[in-house]
Image 1 (tube, rainbow, N blue to C red):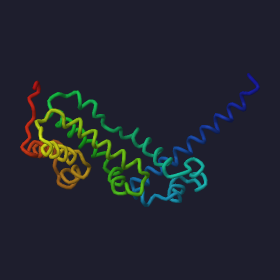
Image 2 (cartoon, rainbow, N blue to C red):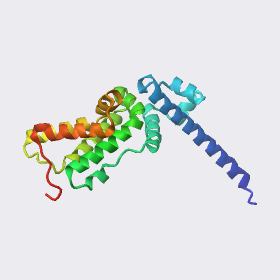
Image 3 (cartoon, rainbow, N blue to C red):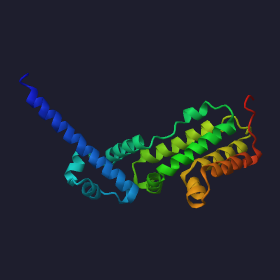
Image 4 (cartoon, one colour):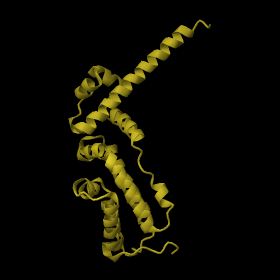
Length: 207
């Protein structure tokens, strides 16, 4: 056996321990964000939740931004965000919207505990969080707006406002979590609202 094997084994074990500690801190942060929100998630609270020292937290994550990035990436692996590219391949705008809302409302049902806290405390989080959420919503609205018969600027604005409203967590909470509607009922209601916005109509599938 090569002479360097024991050293390699030790370094590998040390690397595994470092990664385990990093994951423990990340998961502790994720639990706290979901339980009490980012505003109340202090380094001391993370250290206690992960059963490490404050210094250990800082060694792995020197600032809030690094910790939020790791937490967001880990949470996203567990709750994959819906890809609007799949919606874009659906030509009929109403069929596209129906599928998008059904999928979005099902996603909100599992993502709501965390995302409610993120939206509530976004003002104390690194700026990239709010910027990402705004850009993501804008992109989804743009994908879903294609194909509707809104030609005037005001009608287009109404359409986009209605689509953004239909996609939001607060809408799902109001209609489903609080109002008791099923995802399908909420989807039907929001499609009606979008089509009613300024008297808009959907183009025929082959139009």
